[in-house]
Length: 239
Image 1 (cartoon, rainbow, N blue to C red):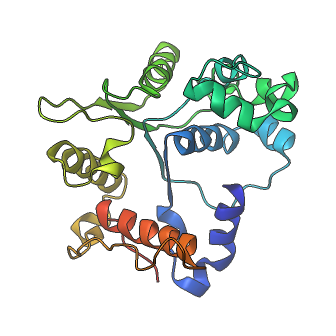
Image 2: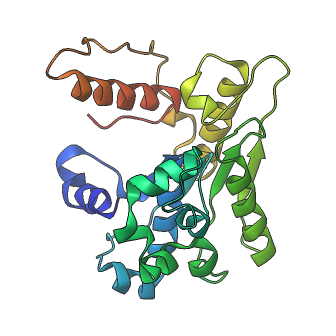
């Protein structure tokens, strides 16, 4: 993620990017990594540990959708074979990372986040999330206990089982539209000087224009998902 920020910093003039309005957004495990970056970007100690150079600009805001947060709990699932999602993920990450106490300690959000160094974040989740709701809630409660200003929103539905990252997986649901509209409103609130000019003209979502057997299938999947995310979140693209 830091490499992405440095790339934006280095190529902003070339591509017409605005360094004053850069946000980071992550869903699920991506939400954890964006939270980690929020901590690292505001801590010289963590920057030294991870050996990173911060960009010349400050990230304007951080959006966390159904984020994971509990790395020690994940590490505790290492070498456990109970069929759970967390055990499967832990064993895929492996001993080299989750078996290293120093790495786990520096990745533990509940150890590295401090009230005087952590920026405002926006968290959204749903109690219907059977994967990471408890961790999203735990992060919210931890930030609240530290007195760290942040936004936290839960979504409910009587018609749909909202599930994990529902607003990405089911963009046509009423609750997803509401959640994504709330994200847009938050982004705009951080950029009052831009106002409604930040809105894109509505564009239909794209389908993947490739078959699974095509050599470039996964490249097309990523390209399509990135396009659709820009449309969903109403964020101006800088092609």
